[in-house]
Length: 351
Ligand SMILES: Nc1nc2c(ncn2[C@@H]2O[C@H](COP(=O)(O)OP(=O)(O)OP(=O)(O)O)[C@@H](O)[C@H]2O)c(=O)[nH]1
Ligand SMILES: [Mg+2]
Image (cartoon, rainbow, N blue to C red; front, side):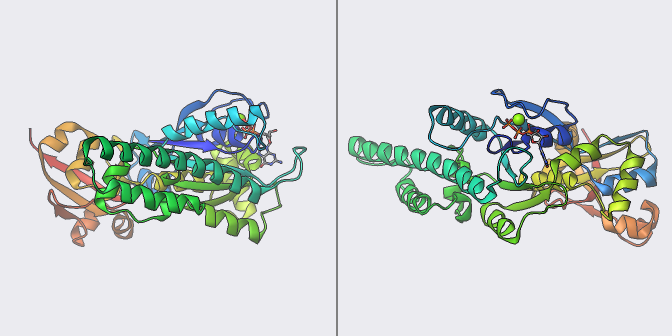
């Protein structure tokens, strides 16, 4: 599961990439190669479970990040080449996090709404090209063979074309199951979840108009100052806590951004706990218990019998697993149980 950090040049993408992955790439330099690294998903619930169980090991859920080279605005040759490169990388990731520059810092007056429009237009035009090619192909296929392998596709593509021509992302459309299946083969860019990261100067949060434009453009908006997040990430946990308390903030904004990206991937976390290890695992939302068991180990899926389930909130309210059990908050669930975010699972299996 990969999240691409995308956007125009000098918006703070690499700065943010360093923060979420712990990498130390040079910033303010541009570059033409993407970078990828894995980052931990911060989760206060896991921290709390670790306090309860004092395990030897605490393992967070993970997300893979890609620092996608930025592209310039304007219709220069360089700009076109950069945009093509950006689109190639964007196609390969599962979700996009667009960093938008709301600070000046010597890079000129910021134009956040312009950046949102520029990126949206790049994605829309690229998708429109796919749709138009496909419509042409389908017409040819009908002429040659007299019928189509997927008779519903032309209608769908026409609907997509109209929507894209109106400069709207495909993610706004509701797809029926047949369409969802057809669409899976195309890697449409405007179908990918988009998180907008408004990167502002310290003490200068974006205006309401910018916030509104961001909300209209993306599924989720996170406002932060990447420079401050970078400084925060360099502190020891104690120093960071002190800093946040002084600022009256519960957690670094970067943590919210990571969780927003994680959620955008349509995944959730469940936990396993014990004296050896407390761990957050990642599974698709809507997954059944055996699938979640399979994330831990394929044997657990193959030999799945039941899952012992306790909701995180119930465990915390009860104080201990034993108390939760005494309060009938630990359930035995079967194969058709849909795992919920924050479930604490123990799998019973036999192979
Ligand atoms: N004032 C201010 N400067 C920032 C902020 N975030 C990043 N910068 C600075 O902006 C410059 C560009 O940051 P990068 O992270 O390299 O930007 P980028 O988007 O990766 O740039 P390209 O890879 O060239 O597209 C660096 O000098 C950063 O220190 C911020 O929140 N506030
Ligand atoms: Mg960069």
